[in-house]
Length: 395
Image 1 (cartoon, one colour):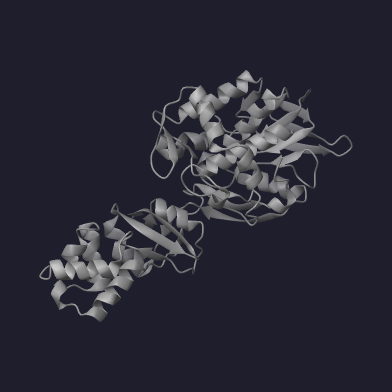
Image 2 (cartoon, one colour):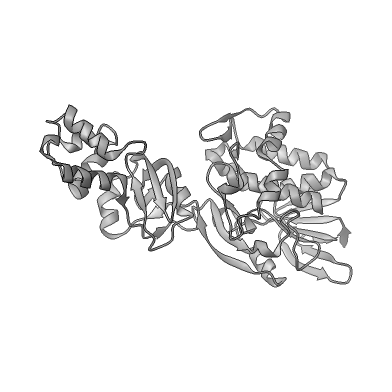
């Protein structure tokens, strides 16, 4: 049996649910097909289980895409404040952590339940644990037939919200990319984004026993910089600043870390020399960065002696190293731990206002499947809400 509906949405993540509830509110018969055993899995794990659901400072500049203008329409028509209004309507308590990042006070489960409740109130049908077996495009009537393990659906619109390749343990697949290629769409090369960087050889050996040490840094690569915490891991480096810069870094690229963010390194060193001339470099450094890290810096990169023994050229060299410490990363942790997937369906072949394919009428791509990726801190969820809302208005 084939059931007639208005729209089938493949994928029950943030974008898919947002699209479904928006379409349902417009009186459309919408069905969400989710192959996993529950919807919103990435929402549930985000923000350490408290869901960094949006960012009040979200702008198009916070997104990466081959077409930097593509996200402007959706973000302008569905803002962080629109989503916040829905959160508040459901009486979900939240707080700002830092830099405009909004987190649930209690649990990310509340955000998922809110989206599900909104879908159900709008008459949306959600099928979980339901795999898509085959999709047929009926060119004559511009419709689609979606065959699943539980029967078929005939719809005039098909929305692909199946996400990217990040965190395959949660069910991520390349389904959306394969479907896009099948219908003639260009798919830009994909790679892991917002992901820890790995070190190898002497670089890993020098830092491996400092695993767990964290400090504020400014990470810079290819003209971009991010200031936040860096965490040393047993395989490399992580933390917000590193996850953010990872989206701009590729093997072989120059990566620099300012280990004294907010300070003029030379001015700081000269002040220490004047005020604490007898203290050793590792001692004064150990008061602004973790002591173990300061000691390793001095052992391997900087040397160590009382501050009064440094001349001006030596202080300038120390300042240059501290403000632009070179760290050679060998790779990333890959999709296994990546929070997002860079690349994806080429936005040149989609409408920026509706997310509809320019090649196949009635076919839409939303969320992480598209070549639009936000930085850390709720930005990517905002894109999911906005692109899902745009498609939901259009179908």
